Image (cartoon, rainbow, N blue to C red; front, side, top):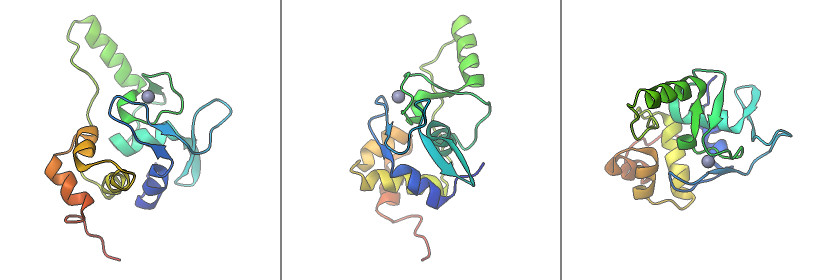
Length: 153
Ligand SMILES: [Zn+2]
């Protein structure tokens, strides 16, 4: 499934962004099971799944799990796909556990650019966004101040 620019923007409007360690609560529609509900690419998906796609580009397994037990949370640092979770457990068992979570894929897509700008508009500083999303400060600064990725109207 694809999440286009407009959809990414719409998604970000429903998120209360916090620090990398905080839960980023979804304030859009909530399903009966407690998970956020989001409409993208012609279908309804869980908000945390959409968040995962936005952060990492794709979902590798059916299961996206929260490491924080907060079903409304859409912080990509708190989301794991089943496969990766198992990998991590394997690593822990083998005593090779690193500090952990895979960082955002550093490829800059238009969706991520918009995501950054939205965070900036919601009050995050370039420095905070840089730390949260693991992009270089200079890159983030240029993006949120529109010095890069100037889109044609
Ligand atoms: Zn969380």
